[in-house]
View: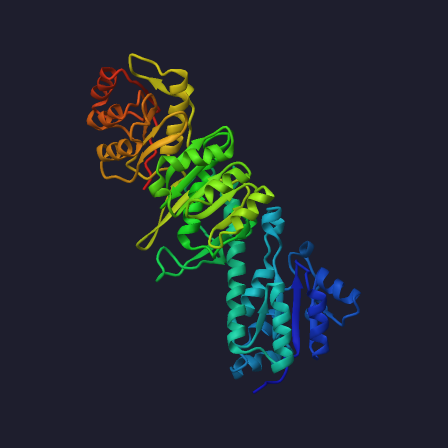
Length: 509
């Protein structure tokens, strides 16, 4: 059942996209338009009948435009409960006409933050309309203009569900705006919290941008959210083929893409499984790097994620096509390589820009979030301390740095064995370091001889070092800091190993 068409709409927008077409459609439907400032001028210039807010309120704009719509005639018309006789009596007493639709969006604060772009009248008007959504429609997104006009044409008014949906969008719009303003205050050098990476409060404004096949398991639902007003490499990535992505596909691909961009400027490849690298290597070309990364742990590589920092060549594509792989991500693909990979219908093929690095690491706990600054990897061998009788050789230094970079991105406890800048054994996520070392040595299967060992945290006992020595590693990098460092160093000397301490651990849970 239709209801009488509302008679008055208030239009006051910064983003003018679609506003002329909306205004013209409303007038064609018999609506009266009220507007202010640039919106009114634009509508009038297009020959659309519009009344200036100042004419309606009999109160000209003041304070350089800071006060335009803040007036009882405006907000009384928006906020009146049409089912309350007292409210309607008040409107009649003061000669106020109800406003049935508010169209407003806010100054683009994030584009040029400053006091003058802190909108007051706009949020007040939008929030008032959203509060009174039982009687008033509110539009903050030009994408909603067309569907709203269609519904008005079909039904004469907006349904309850539509008005409620639009009200929620309006409050989300103002919440995002306020979050941006708080962030601006926090970033001000004059702020009390400017130097504090963990602010007194965190105001997250996230928008759902991608529905996933499922969460970690098929009975869970999952989605990707993006910080409002920003973009990341996922937003610009080109998907060249494959099934829809699941939660773990994104999680593991993010881990692989970040790691491959931490391994240096030469051709690098990594293979990730369950967020942990099971292979990482440098090669003379990207095909060689991929094959070396796969050889680290071919069993675990089955169903893994592959990331490379060079365009995928035909040689790499042919090698990759022999292994069941969930996702491959690269900066580009040679045309013939792309065609070859696209023949595998289930392989997700991503072309992506380099990742950026977040400032905070956030995880959910009961009643809130656990927040820390992100782990920044500092791999500068010049700052490391040699603590053994023997210094590392030049090839050992190269392997030590590579092993340290990989170990920092593996779940703790971890031991990584590397030879010629190729991971040959990775022991990940163990409850004790000795088991991590044993697993890494077993996977290396003799390939670590003359190579390097990295431990993400100190060795609490010398037995943790024994597995690396037995695997043939001749150099070790670890943070140090154990009360038994002297015993561990003595063990390294006894095996003729070189050991360096970084002074910084990289626990990862």
